[in-house]
Image (cartoon, rainbow, N blue to C red):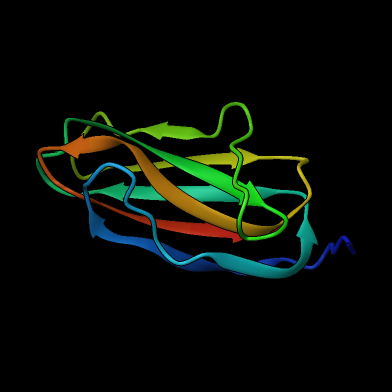
Length: 111
């Protein structure tokens, strides 16, 4: 597996979702990238929930590095987390604790 230092443009991952284990499209970096980011925008009314960034090298087996989560504890707010260096080709975001009071939209990227 090759490792690239060329970034992958951000991709919208979750589209106004709130349900437990909801996940969006997978970002395929083409090659493994070492650094990955997750940005989460909460809607009005959100008071709780967690979104995680997960990585994979085969698009089947997923794992979450330490400090990979965003706790959504406020409405109409932007949250973010970056993880690395963890070489991985595929990246996704997933709701690991249902969003309370609203929904979230997220973007993922790799570099």
